[in-house]
Length: 105
Image (cartoon, rainbow, N blue to C red; front, side, top):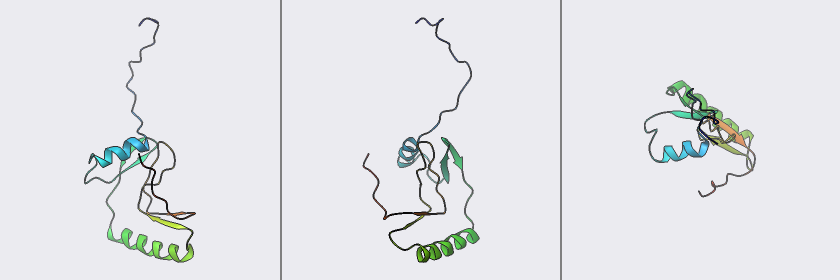
């Protein structure tokens, strides 16, 4: 195939990050001192948490742990892999089954 036969795009296209790319970049300190989340392959800046928010999350976690005893797992402000391109960090997530360590990469 020659260059003339191959359609060359002149329109810039955004790069979609995968959760793996995002977590690897975070491990290397690319997002130090930043609150960011990966949503649909895009890195989103998140606002700082205020005291009232932290208080509400703490109370919610306490109640959820009471309502959802083991084998449920109340995951607190941690990356939740939804698919290859989404790894938000919800304030709280209730997951079924005991926590398991991430697979080694």
